[in-house]
Amino acid sequence: MLRIPRDQLTYEFSAASKPVASVAPGDQFVVETHDTSTGRVHRAEDMPEFVRVRDPLRVNPAAGPVFVEGASPGDDLIVEILDIRLQPYGFVRVIAGAGVLQDGIEPDGVLMARVDGEHVVLGERVRMPVRPMVGVIGTAPADGVVYTAAPGPQGSNIDVNAVTVGSRVHLPVHVEGALLAIGDVHASMGDGEVSGTGIEIAGEVTVQVDVEPRAAAARPWIETDSDWITTGSGPSLEDAVEMAVDELVQRLMRHLGLSRTEAFLLVSARGDVRIGQCARIRGLDTTAYVVFPKTVERLNS
Image (cartoon, rainbow, N blue to C red; front, side, top):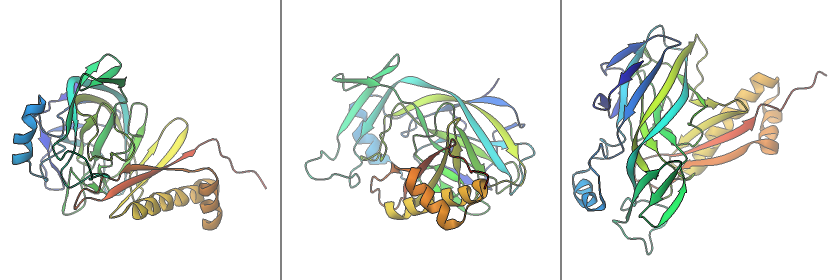
């Protein structure tokens, strides 16, 4: 099986990026990912130096980009997450000047993490189950650059827990070959990622790619066996929620043949709005998502 090593990485989604590999629809392959520090933090004592040299445009490295044969602008690139394997060590930290709480929070606070089977141990004081997910997944925009630190309409730092094993991530294709990249694995990330980080950790993600011609949505959306999940991003949480709800309303209008008002009321009756990232990181949008069950059906009338 094709493997993309973690040293073949990018910090941006761009049509000008040179692909590191090529795959065909139906192919499965593995991407090796760095943690958000690109492997510079191994112990708590490493954090001050990392913070000193940290470039906000060179975080969340993503493996790739990968050229997907036959993917053309307007197509829907479907990336199924088959497996996420975690490296032994990671960390969760405070980002100075960011985070939902500031008062009483140490600006350099950090807990190192150790993976222990199906659990993760934080600071050798707390043990909890792992909940692996992928923070960054996306394709290249038609023009310009979307950095891997930021969410974009073609993906990138979506940061929603729905991107996990068993989910199928639908990404719009804007350039030939899509130029897919994947990174920013977390051993666990609470909805909201309120400090600005989850448990940042290196890993390996096994995926399968497929292409549905001329079926691209305006934004990334996610499908599981049981749910449709739409995403949104914006300068405020309200903006992100509005976008995610609007994307779901449009999907329900098409799928169930409803008016916009009917679809909106259906989301209010059964859609679950969740927060992806609301850490108040300067210059970065927040993210939100809405989960809606496939069991809701249109009656014949």
